[in-house]
Image (cartoon, rainbow, N blue to C red):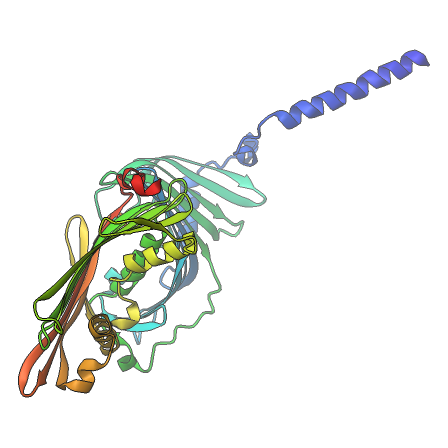
Length: 480
C-alpha cells in the first residue's frame, strides 16, 4: 500500500512537471495553420481562379481595411483607413460607385464620402462638399480592388482545408501588386491569403507587403471582405451645392498633412510672415523657428524674430528677438538676450498646443477651398488652393488685428474694399504624404480719399520631419 502511494505521488509529480514544461515552450505563431497532409489542396491556383470567376466585380459591395506604417529613420507614422465600397453597373445611366471612408493618422481623423456618376465625383470631406470631373478608370485606380491578389506574381501558392473553408496562401512574391503604387517600388517581401467558403465564395482577402520608395520603408496591410450588397447609391440632386475643384484628392491631402504634422514626435519648421498696410505705412515681419523633440522627455524650442514699424512715430522701427524653451518639464523665456525668466504656469500641454497651432497655421481647412489645382513631379505634389470669401475675411481680420488691434478698421474707414488675391499652397512628399511646405498669400485693395492702397499678408512655412538637430539645439544653456 505504501509503495502504491509512492508510485501515485511520483506519477502525479511527473504530470505536473510535464505540464509546466509545456507551458514554458513558446507557441508557434502559425500553429493554427499547420494542417494534416490530407487537408492540403491539390490545385489551389485553380480553386482561386474559380472563386474569383464567381464574382461580378461591377456589382459588389465590399469593405477595405488598410494599415500603413511609414518608417523614416527612427520615426514611425501610422495611417489606418477603412472603406465601404459599392459598385453598381447600370446600362441606362452608366456605372455608379460609392465610398464611405475614414482615415486615422495619430489622433487626427478624416471622414470622406464619395459618389461617382457619369464622369463626376461628388465628395464630402470633413463636412465640406466638392465635385470634380474624372474618368471612370482613373476613379477606380484610386480604390483597392476587392480581388487583391494576382496569383501570377507569386512563386509559391499553397492551400489547405479548415472548417469547411479553403485557405489559399500566396508567398515568394516576385513583384508588388499593381494597385500599390505608381512609383518605382523596391519590394522586400509580400504575401497574400484568401479564404474561400465551401460554396466557392470569397470570404476574405488579405495582402501584406514591405517595400521601399526613395529610401522610405513602408509596411502595408490590406484586407477586403464582402459586405451587404443591398446598399443603394443616391446621386446628389443638388450638384451646384458642391464646390467645383480641378482635383478631387486635394481636400484629403490637406487633412492628411495636418494629421502627419500633429502626430510627428520630432519636427522642426521655419515660419515667416509679412504684413503691410500701405495706407499708414505700417509693416511687420516675423520669423518663428519651431523645434520639437519627442523622442524622450518632450521638449520644444521657439525662436521668434519680430520687426515692425509704427506709423504714429515717424521713422520708428522696432526689433524684438525672443526665445522660448520647454525642457525637463519647465518653461523659460529670454527676450533680446536679457535675463532668462521661468514660468511655472506653462504646462507641456499648453506648449504642445501652441507649437501645433504654428505648425498647422498655414494649412487651410477643406471648408475654405473654392478651387484647387495640383502639379505632380517625380517626388512631390504641388497644390494651389483658392480661398473662399470666409477664409479671405479671416486673413484680413487677422492682419488688421495684428497691426491695429482692430480687425475691422479697414472696413470701417475705407471705401470699396475688395480682395485681389487669396491663395494658399501645400507641397507634399509624393512617397510618404508628409508635408514639405505650406503658406498663403493675401492682397486686399481699397481707397481712402480716392487714393488706392493695399493690405498684404503673406505667410510661408517649411517643414522638416524628424529633425536631427532638435535634440542638440534644445540641450543648451536655457535648459539649465
